[in-house]
Amino acid sequence: MADIVITAANVVAGASAQTKTGIAGATIAAGDIVYLDSTTTGKWQLADSDAAAAEARGLTGNIGMALNSAALNQPVVVAMPGTQVTVGAVLTAGTAYYLSDTPGKLCPVADITGGDYFTLMGLAASTTVLNLDVQYSGVASP
Image 1: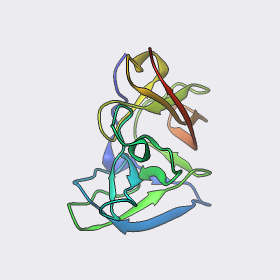
Image 2 (image 1 turned 180 degrees about the vertical axis):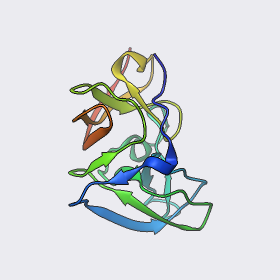
Image 3 (image 1 turned 135 degrees about the horizontal axis):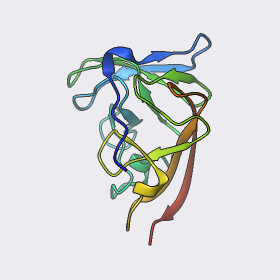
Image 4 (image 1 turned 120 degrees about the vertical axis):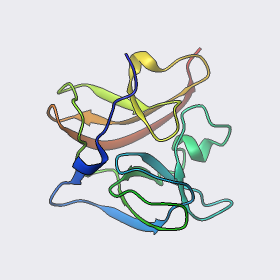
């Protein structure tokens, strides 16, 4: 399989969304998985399952899905765990989706390869909605 292709224009948070607002530290598209870089920039960066920094893999819990696209140094709103997000992609209901080794992207578990860390981003509630429920394992794929 491959990374989930998300249509940025179709990303919408659920009615009781838990969000954080901040500044983009990179070019971000709605639907990208981002983390708050608290150690260097204080800005939202693209998360990455094989990044050297554990924070970029979801260790601190300041990780979620961008709800809007943003250029560098522009405002971004991030859906946090506990939020349902219509992702503008075709999901398989009941399937778990993980942080990809492509910065900012989601993938199925089959795409986690050697050296990538397992960071569960959530379970598909339907073919279009992802329940964000981030769980950082701290375990790398062999």
